Length: 142
Image (cartoon, rainbow, N blue to C red; front, side, top):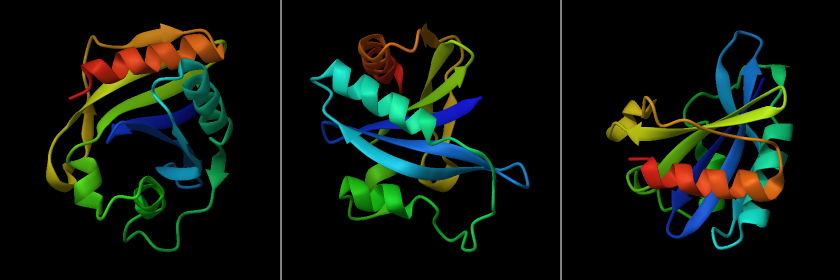
């Protein structure tokens, strides 16, 4: 299974891969990408690239202080709080020939996000369909 996450923040879409460590934890990993939400094809291509970056068996990070720092810097946010407080999030999973999009609810502070039950959407791995499905899922994210 490949994992990625997408955020809508200040009118842009930001995506990153998730990789599974040797200890079984999922951690933010490269690539970190940006896409214009007005172009579903571009968004779809970015989703495919982010999913392709999802790996298994990566080493544990040497510093756990803020593994999201590369995403925050890429987005141009002044701080982690400035980004996550206003970003809508969708978790993306690819298994076999299907891609599932799960809108997330922000829990505030450093509590992260939780999945919104019953809001999942599915798509085939076609870039235009992927982009449109993600944009639709972001509308449900809280």
